[in-house]
Structures are given as C-alpha cells and as structure tokens.
Length: 299
Image (cartoon, rainbow, N blue to C red; front, side, top):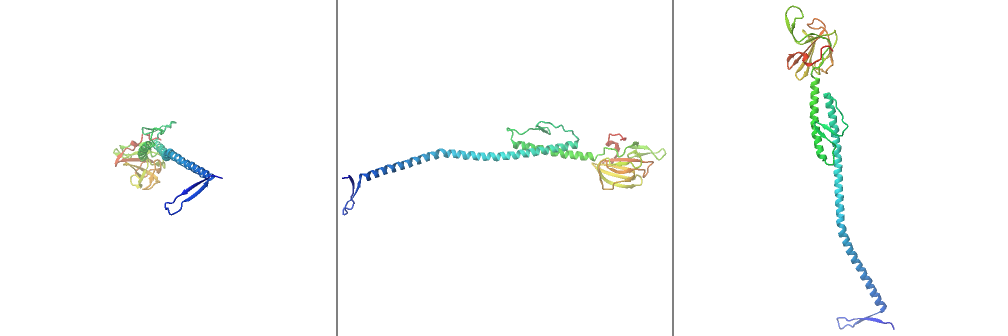
C-alpha cells in the first residue's frame, strides 16, 4: 500500500467540517522540486538584477565621460573649422597686402627684391607663418593693422603719383633755348628791354608740342599778342602756357596727359620766327618754367 500524506484544514468556523487533502510522495517530491526550481530562478533573477545595477553604476560614468569627450571633440572640430577659415582669411589679406605693395612699388618706381623665405616684412613689422604658439586671432588683428597701414601708404602713393603726373617734368618740344626767362633786349629792335615771361625754344615750323604734365585745358584759342595759345591748369597751383603755335589740337575743358600732343609750333602772334614760347605760373606767380626740370632743352 502506497504512502500518502494528508493535510487537514480546520475552518475557524467550528460549525463547518474539517477538510482533508491527501497527496502522494510523488506529488510531494514534485512540489518540493518545483519550489527549489522556483527558488533558484528567483535567486538568479535577484543576482542578475544586482549585477545589472552594478554594471549600470560602473559604465554610466564611462558613458557620461564618452559623451563629454564627444562634445569636446565637436567643439574642437568647430574651432578647427573657424581657425581654418581665419587662416584662409589671413592668407587672402596677405595676398592683398602683397598686391598693394606691388602697386605702391609700381607707383614709386621701386625695385622689389622678392625673398624666397616664408617671412614677409611690411612697414618694419615682421610677419612669420602662424605657429602653434601664436594665436590666429592675434595674427588676424596684426594683419588688419598692416592692411590699414598699407591702404594709407597706397593712398599717399596714389596722391604722390597724381601730383607727379600733374607736375611739369618734360620739355614741350626739342630744340635750342633761344631766349631765357627774365629781362632781355627787345627782339623787335632798338635798345629797349622787356621782361620775357617764359622761355623760347627754337624749333621747325609744325613741330609737335606736348603737354609737360597732366591737366585741364583752360584756354585754347587766338590771342593778339601770343597768337594761337594754350593754357593748362595742372592743379596744385601750377599753370603752364604754350604760345605762337600754328595749329591747336585741343579745346578748353579737355583733359590732357603728360606727353600728349596739344599743338604744333609756328609763328603766330607777335613773333620774329618759328619757335615755341613756354611759360609757367605757381600760385598765380610767373616763374621760370625750367625750375620744373633738370633736363637740358636739347632732347
């Protein structure tokens, strides 16, 4: 006869009959085994949860550190992009400075000695390639300062070139000086003297007459004394005039350049022969036109 186990359940209400539950040894073993399995399962879950918590605690800091590194890397990438842009901007400005320097040298007729070194000198300040120890922002400020200085130098050079172009420095025709500036004996005879307001340059009839500097023609026409005459205002208080011409090629209001043909020599007006009378004023005062040039009249 198989052994059985009984469980008697006595209700709290004594009026009810006790209940009896019987189960065999096999059922007992099943329940015990099941209980052990469930205990091991829940114990495993508990251990797993503890391990998960430990894992999260250990790696949560590492993940935060990685996120921080990624943010720093992104910030560095943005800074590198900004510095690359700043470097390109500096290179463009250096190129602009080189162009400005070349223009200034061209205006001032300076021979530029190009160095193969990477150092660029501007206005006494040495600009070397930006190294790791130099801040690009500081270099950019220095370049801006240099660019501003070069622009000022360029403006001065342009003004100098303009003044140079508007200052008489050549002779209007080639020929011998037949009469100087100042008092002379009357060329029409007699023993009287007269003040000669310019210089006379002997030349063949219809010799091209050239403007001795750039300027604006203020008069081009016939004068009873000077014959066919041209006045040119060069600015800076300088005016030149050309008289006794046979033909004029410009009109009042025309802008002329240095060396441009403005007339052809002749014998018009009060003259004793074919020549050019060349005169000049500085701030309204009559001066010897030879003060503008160290060249001889014979060209």
